[in-house]
Amino acid sequence: MVLALIFIKKCIEKGGRIQMSHSVIEMNCPGCGAPVFVSDKTCKYCHRPVVISTFNNVCDMPIQEVNKYVDVYTNVLREVPNSQAINFSIAMCYLKLKLYDKAIRAFDKAVVSELNNSEIYFYSAISLLKGKKAFLQQRATIDQIQEYINAAITIEPKGIYYYFWAYIKYDYFKRKCFATSPDYVELFDRAKCLGISEFDVCQLYSILGVIRPECL
Image (cartoon, one colour):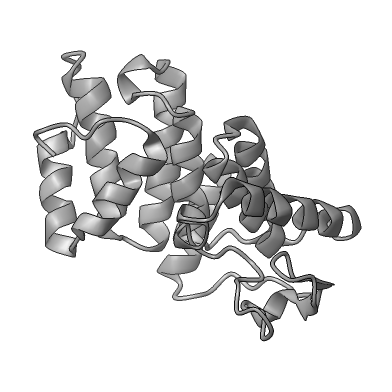
């Protein structure tokens, strides 16, 4: 993971973009079963997403329907196990289903195929908490989470990434009285400067499955 972060930094410093090959993958729409391509993004028949590109796609999806998506993606991955889009999509489904270990493995496969997708690192970091407070985690897990957050920020410095990092700094470092720099206040201020919506914050805590601290 450290090598991947170094590689990303070098590409950004040179103004380059990491190029990945794209394969046209045919599959059945998880919603209606019609033949579609992964590149279609949305089914032209039922207008449901073909691939899950954001957590919004599965946030309000019934569990039975999420399981249908998992079944379709599992079949596709038997034929194309290295598809970044499908590995990311099934990882998001697993995250919705709170199957954290499966989500982590799928995100790991997705990042191998596309190192410059900041959301893979962001959601990987969330998955590592496994629905528990940062306060309850081992230090090795917290260090890995911070590594993923740093990777996401290196690619695309979003306010919600800094906000999530602020949560980690508060719930693990501040509550345990560990010295750390930057601290959660600095990261929270950075998040607000970049811009964060109340919707994104509420959704983050919904995914995390923890109560929002009053100071954040």
